[in-house]
Every structure is written in structure tokens, then in C-alpha cells.
Image (cartoon, rainbow, N blue to C red; front, side, top):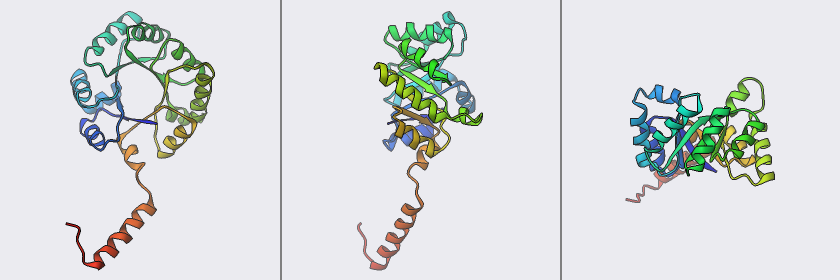
Amino acid sequence: MKFFADTADVDAIRELNDAGLLDGVTTNPSLIMKSGRDFKEVVTEIAGFVEGPVSAETVATDHETMLAEGRELAKIGDNIAIKVPLTLDGLKTCKVLSGEGRMVNVTLCFSANQALLAAKAGATFISPFIGRLDDINLDGMELISDIRTIYDNYGFETQILAASIRTVNHVTEAARIGADVATMPPEVIKKLAEHPLTTKGLDTFLADWEKTGQKIL
């Protein structure tokens, strides 16, 4: 499974990237707003040091303007994945951009039928939102499972990008089902490394080592 950081915090992205834990980045208008920075400036900076896909979202709702925005964002770099909403205009834009050889991330997916349409439109990534479905008492993981089954049935190459991940358990379940990518806040990626028995074991080892009076360096 590939790990994407769902943030526009450049320092947090650099930390994970330098640790070798990052395969890409997803951004959206809300994350850009939180960063307090210029949209193109921050996306350009991220795409400059992250080798994998960096999703940059269009904000228009009509096809023609969305397409123009997508083409403009694509100029930032070859690793830009143009993010479009799962609407008819978004799917139409996806079809054109993917036909031009661009990576396209179709976002705000909440049903298997929507994911089927995105695959037919040539999407590189489909982004089903797990957490937001859980928020309204629907099973986000069931959606991931349904999409995996449908894509496998027909050999669609669109990658399932599990989004709106809130917990480490979301990551485990998405990986078990077979999601291709998990995009999550940096703090969730860090929590994947945590376990109380790891902490306890390390404390024991260090205490015993101190008793030996030895040094490695």
C-alpha cells in the first residue's frame, strides 16, 4: 500500500519524506486555507521535493473552466495529479485530461456507482471518503470493499485511494481490503509506528543496557 500525506504543511511533508515513509501528497482547498499560503506556491514547493503524485484540486464546477484550471495546474510538474470532483462535469474533465496523459484524482466519492464511472472516465485515482461516511453512520470500509470487487471484476486500472482516514484502524482495514493508496494526516502516519509493547520493550532494553556500563560510540 502507498502512503500519501493529506496536508499542505510543507514541514510535516518533508519530515515524512526524509524518513522514506511517503509515496505522495494530497491537498485540497481546505488544507491550503489552513496553510495560510498561496495555492500555486505551496503546491509547487511540495511537488519540487516529493517524487510521487501530488494532488492539486480544481475549484471550478463547470467543465470548460475546470479543464482550463487542470491544464494550468499540470504545468507545475509531471508529478501533479489533477483533482476533480465526482460530478458529470468532473468526469468529463477527467476523460479529457487522462486522454492527454495527465494523472487525475477523482475526489468526493461516496458510492460504488460513482467509482465505476470514474474508472470508465480513465481516472488514475478514485478517492472514496471513509471518515465522512462513518460520520453519518454508513460503513466507509464497505465502500472500499465494493469498489475493490468491481474494479477487479473488470480489470480497471484506477487506483483506490482511501481518503478521509481518521484512525490507524482505518489504515489497517483499507490495507486488508486491498486499497492501493491511503492518504492521511501526518499524525496518523506517525501513529502507525506506535505500540505500547514496543515502548515498554525499548524502555526495558535501555534500562538493562545502562546497567552494563557499556557504550557503542
